[in-house]
Image 1 (tube, rainbow, N blue to C red):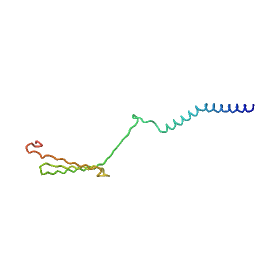
Image 2: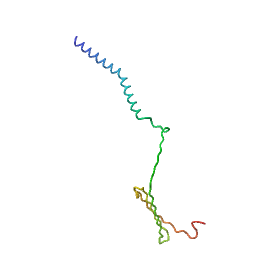
Image 3: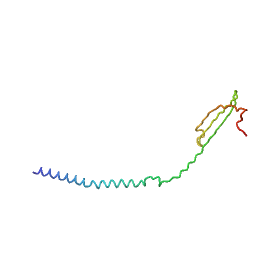
Image 4: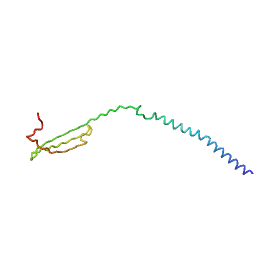
Length: 115
C-alpha cells in the first residue's frame, strides 16, 4: 500500500507542477511581449515621408580639359582630333576620351553662314 501511495503522491505533485506552469504561461507571455515593446520603443518612431525632411548639399569640383586639333589632309579634307580629360581635383586624369572625325572642306559656292 505504501508503494501505491507514493506513486499517487508523485502523480499529484507532477500535476500541480504542470498546472502551475500552465497558469503562469500567460504572465510569462505578457512579460516577454512587454520587453519586446520596450525594445521597439527605444528605436523611436517609424519612418514617415510626411514627417521627415532633409537638406542635402552636394559640392563637386571637376576638371574638364578638351583639346581639339584640326589638320588638313592631302586630299583637302579636314581631320579633327578631339581629346577630353575628365576628373576631379583629387584625380585629374581619371577618365580620358579621345576621338577623331573627317570633315569635308566647305564649298566656296555655298557659304556656311549668310550675313
